Length: 135
Image 1 (cartoon, rainbow, N blue to C red):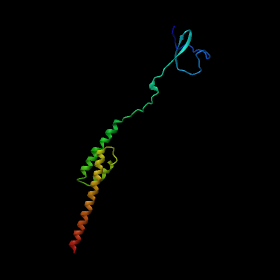
Image 2 (image 1 turned 120 degrees about the horizontal axis):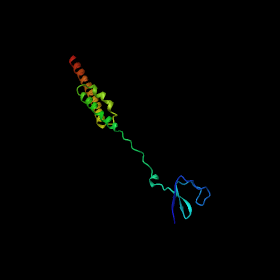
Image 3 (image 1 turned 180 degrees about the horizontal axis):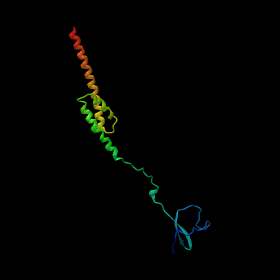
Image 4 (image 1 turned 90 degrees about the horizontal axis):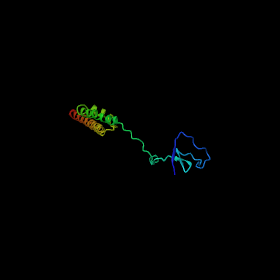
């Protein structure tokens, strides 16, 4: 038995020969086997049949952008102890993806509400005491 490989640039055998089944196969070459020309079929890898996972795209800038929210939120939180207005301004960071900035913003809004309530009670007390002195 002698096998001889025929180069790809040779012409394909005409239809109707004994090995033509009418199907379109992926032939890389033809070999002579027992006096007949037989196509060599490319075998596909099993990896082609496995489903491919979509690639994961990582944006490293997103992480640093979230970290940038921490310092301004912290500065507004601390400034709120001296002036009450920065606490309400800090509500911009409530929807931040950074959990520290979000916690500082929620704490600032809570402290603003608490300080506003204390301020209202303080003025009510002053008005009450002032009305008591008039009598």
